[in-house]
Image (cartoon, rainbow, N blue to C red; front, side, top):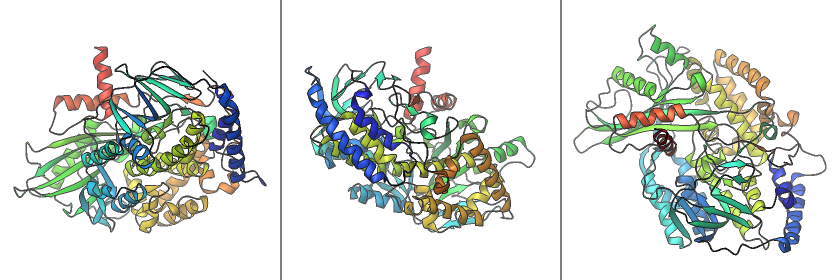
Length: 593
């Protein structure tokens, strides 16, 4: 198997994707152009040394996509229908339903429909609210019942309609085959797997759980953040002093019919945050825990039903937690029950459905950008590190990955290493890494705060102009408002405006945490918004064998996933489906019995 040293031009290209110090007199554009030219020369000179595989395969394609979630289907649809590539989509459950409810800002969803060239995305909206409500009462003089109304529309995406749309794009392209199988492979060293994937100089061979073989020029990993197929980059590459551990958004929710309406929640508004804690008894241990490890409720009114009752989806959410600050699903369920009872919201017995156990890894390290397998979606860490928003960011990033791969596939002398490098560069450029560093700090700060300071923070946050706070929540090129956050001086301006609205206690907490975070993790935060003083990061990183690979996340928060699986098994409700991570952890536990 050829080593990465034999693809010297591609190593150089991959090195350009790591954060780099600006060299005066040698612009990044010149450096990229020279690397690209050298890459083409080296690829052409190496062509005579390549050995074209002669074995017969069950499937021979340009692109193999592994994973049957939204990221996998989006990439398969774009590569086959928009770019004309031949694709094999490996989905262990093609007939299955995606488990999570997706709520998005309408403006972002509309922009995505244009960016992807899929106006049918707007037909995947199942509910729409013209206004969005938040509740941050109980701190800094705000009464408990104070409502902050955001004049920005929110939509609920019909996940089944979205899957059908992407499946239809795949089917009508005539260039993608959906294969019902698993890929049982785990990365054990740089570009080396224990089973199932073998790379060579011109592509990769996949052996699936069914025994079928797939020959592909490029392999895309859409199996999620806890992938076994891609490694995370080492801290030396990211410029952090310590390993960046992921946090976890944990949420428990359900849809139900209501006896006497929605209580304080407006049936015509989406409630994004309700961070109030007045449903706990004063002085109780439950209140103390809720103040220290806050949760909020998220309410999606579903309208009046034929029987005259209101229906709604409620979800109690821990924004992000880790270690002692992570909450479990049972605790979220208990808090939701107490909240609804206190507010006089009465669930009609026997009407609970779509019980949801939401588990979203957030933050953590980026994938190793020098590896052959290209991570997409959650595997590529596109989840917003501060908020957990993921669907719009994944879809926005997919267009850039598809365009980069299409260009490489059309090159006169194709190199899989160069294709992977180009795909990674399209989503994790140095500038976007700096923007993510800023977002990562935001998530770490929010994770550490008690409820009083969270209420003060978000009250200040939503006093900003909509385009500013909306741009931060989106935080990805091509999404609305990102143009106010994509450069260091814009992030500094945003931070100063937000700081001006904050209560003094929150200002002090943010400054104190910025100092402690930087002392532990290094200058990543400072680089993100005062780049001229701190540079863009480490010097260009040229890896030796395996040196850029830190580890592979394969387990995540097993305690949370097993808890969800047991709760589902104990009291199943109609329409309740475990997430892929929860399902896999259940299978592992059963295998040990």
